[in-house]
Each structure stands twice: as C-alpha cells, then as structure tokens.
Length: 558
Image (tube, rainbow, N blue to C red; front, side, top):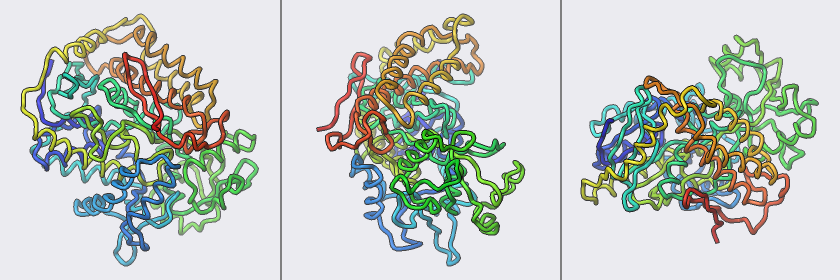
C-alpha cells in the first residue's frame, strides 16, 4: 500500500483539473493532481477541436451580458443564473490568460483575435486555434504551467475508488495504481472532482475512454447532490459514413461553424425548416433542436443509407474549403472523399452531460472539503448547453474551485486523516482483485451491454416503458451482477479491475440518469420524451438526486 499526503487533491487532469491545481497552488496550497491517464493528456479537453465562447468583442461589439442572455436562452429556463453569469463574466479573463501563456488563437487580418458564430449565439463570439487544435493547444499551455510549479505534484495512471469522509468532512480518497494494482490512500483536506461526464457509457460517443460517470458515483457516495442529470447533450453532426481512418467523429461540427454546410435528408431535401428553423446552410441552430430534427427525419423513413442524414459542402468553393480545413483536406483525400463532389453522412452522438454535481459559485458541493468543476459540475447549462461554453466552463470553474479549496484548507488544522474511515474502501479494493477469477462474465462485457442499453433506452428520445426497463436492468447490474463478474488476479496493468470500479461508480451514475429522466414527464432541451412531448410550466424547475442507504432519492426544486 502507498500513502500520500497533500492539502488539495485534484482528481482529473483536463482543463478544469489543471486550472484548479494551478489556482490552488497560486493561493498557497500544496496540490496533488492525479489522472487515470497521463496528466494533461487524458480527458475531454485535449479532444476539443474548435470553439471556446468568450465575449471579447474583437470581431463585433459584444459583452458578457449578451453572452449570458444567449446561455440562458439555450438552457431552456433551467440555468443557475449565478453560475452562468460567473462563466460568461470570467471567460474573457481566461482567454487573455491563455494568450499570455502562448496559446495561438486564430487571428483576423488586422491582428485581432478571430471570433466566429456558433450555434445559438447572437454574436461572433467563439475563439479557436487552427487547424482544429483548440483543446490540444489549451492542454499544452496548462501542462507547461503546472510542470513549472513546485507546489503541484503530478500523479498519473491512478484511479480513485472512493472519497474518504470522517464525521461528514472530506479527509482524502482511496484508489489504486493502474500499472501495479497497488492500493493508494491520499490524505487531503480538500478534494476537487474534475472527472468529466458519463458519455463513454453510450454506444455512439465522442468521449474518451475514461469519461464513465465515475466522478458522479464518487460524489453521490460522499453525500453530494446531483442536479439536472436527465439532460444529456447529443452532438448532432457525429460522423457516420463513409468509414474514415484517423477522423475524429466531431470533425464536421467545427467545419460547419467555419463554412456552413447544407443538411439534407435521404431524399436530398433540406429539412430544418420543417422543425421551426431556417435554412440549414448557416449553422446557427442549437444542438437540442438539430438533434430532434435529424432523429425525426430518420424515424420518418427519410434517412440516408447508413441511418443518418447528409451533410453537403458541395456548394462551397474549393479554395474556401482549403483555407478553412488546411491539412484536413489531405486526410479526406487519403480516404477517397472529395467534399466538392460528395456529401458525408452524419447522425447525433452522445457528447456532453449538462447536469452534474450541484455546486455554488465557489464550486462547493455542500460536503465540507468537496468541490467539483468542469463537465462534472451541474447548473450552469440548464437543459441544453450553448455551443462553445464547455471549455470556458472548465477553465473558469476550475480556477474558482482551486482558489476556494486553498482558502478552505488554510483555515483548517492539520492531521485529520482517519485510518478507520478509509479501511472499508481499502478492503474493497483488495477483495475485488481476483474476484471470481476465470469464472464469470467480464467487466468489459458488462460495459458493452450497458452502452447498448443506454443508447437504445435512455438515448435521444425516451419514453416511460424504455426508461423503466433500463432502470430495472441497471439496478440488477449494480446490485447483483457486478458481484458476479470475473476480475483477473494479475497485478500488472489489470484492466479488469479498472473496469470493475468504473462500473461500480458508473452504474450509480447511469441509474441516477434513468431515474431523473423517468421523473421529468415533459420534453425540454436535451430531454425529449415521446410520451410527454410538451414543455410544461410545472417542470420549470431543476431536479436533485442524492443517495440514502444506497438508494437514490429525488425531488424537484420548489
């Protein structure tokens, strides 16, 4: 067993985690920044290709107040306005800070930062790094900053299994080293969860392999509440066909932001106008509306050959394509795709979790010493996230969480670790390694089954029958089948034990999502129900869930 000690433990090495670590260290705390992968190279941030919303006003007049108006409108009445305001007001500060850290934002001919219109925005507001390297550039800048800070210790390839509390307060966490299966205890007066969402657990997803809902499970077990979890965003322009080697499934979204592009059904007809929208050539339709329109076209038998819709750039001059896409055109050519002559097929794909751990404007969860930032934190996005708000949300909330956690730790006396509180969690780790070895279904198989279940029963369009079926299946998986899985006794890179713990916390998150979706008997934003298609004033309120005696409890805000 290995025991580590720090002031602030930051779990998750994406933009939220790295900003949180940097901020906590700048405010006097000793920080341990850990990740299941390599710190700064895992998670969702590094995969982000294009837009980062920030009311800089460099392309046209703009300000945080207008950004807030657009954010609240996209959220369909459920945004926590204090959190949304915090995001919009502070995004320009983070963009300027990254500029100082050598992030090369795309520029206009006059030298000012280029800003583009993204879906749901009323202004050209979104900044980016060419070519489709926004997330990678942000990650590189943050890695450089934290690597130079002696107060930040980095720990890669470690997964958390539980948060440790004593008399209701956070005192640290337990986990294990993925490469050796060595149990690890981490003594920390504050923990900041920056572990992302849950969309790995859907068959079609943009998520990296470590976004499995574990953070939500950890938070629930520690006593935190979850808010707005029924709202899961689907990325409308997820690549479907033709098959392409080396293509990120999200490539077409930023391409449409820059170029427009026509969405056509299987009959070659534009269709957005049939769903209360204008022409699809200019991409300004919010993601929830676009997902709805595409789903319905396919459902009505007007889909493309592979079950999606067509996205065409054939009307755009080749020089414009080359200017916007640069080296990506070569990738398309290698895959025998000429965008001037043929469309591609796209269809929505699970992308982002709007709801999450309930926090205030200091990212406090209500559990003393526990904070959350980034996609795992709920409230700022309401029922639908405005395009381009994910990266600033991660950076703004991460910075805020780090500052608040450092301030909290500074007011505490040292020596709060309690071995007895950690003991049950350590015993669980030791008991799982080798559980039913060689005799039972595998964790990987259960994950595959869960992905199919979530896609078909808790996906873009829902109904009570499917949700009840999903809920019953998830509860059986969590309460019974999980204990019957075969986990290898190997100690070197034992992926089965990693997957077992992903399921333990991830299944709790999936159950919470199904409960929340079943309880909301209306359609709003990213939550659409065939059996309750109307948006109702009686549900113009957020839903909270929490854990009592291993059972989920929920209520709607009054």
